[in-house]
Image (tube, rainbow, N blue to C red):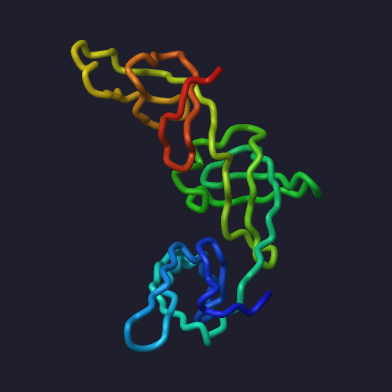
Amino acid sequence: MAKINGNEIRPGYVIEHDGGLWVAVRTNTVKPGKGGAYNQVELKNLINGTKLNERFRSAETVEQIRLDLKDFSFLYAQEEALVFMDTQSYEQLELNKDFVGDRAAFLQDGMMVTVQLYEDRPIGISLPDYVTLTITEADPVVKGQTAASSYKPAVLENGIRVLVPPFIGAGERIIVDTNEITYVRRAD
């Protein structure tokens, strides 16, 4: 752990503040006409997800936390739990589906994920940015909607609905952005 000044906080930094772990989501350096400059920081609690806006002056110091990143392989889903295996020690880790959120639907057997650990306790998970999935059903193209860029709804093999271009049909494989849950392009 390292102490940093309040004006050095950048988005993505994890800090200890008011007895909790917070990640900086957005920062803005403010230089008012009267008084000293300060760093306006939007923080998100890593444990319960609450948000907080805080001002940090350059003279204030905070503790920057270093998280351990470990690679895990997704094994299977079991009721409300997701089971992962550490690729180094082969130990298994069970996480609640709520911990992963909506993106749990994108998990596939053997998929590599990165788990953020603080004192051997998981506090975050990163899935691959893009996954390849098959479309199970897609609406037919409506004639006359070619003047503007029009997208149609489609259902993926994992049950997620995305908007796809009119030339994409059922049975095709597409690449989906797991962060935005949007269509990227056709798979090769």
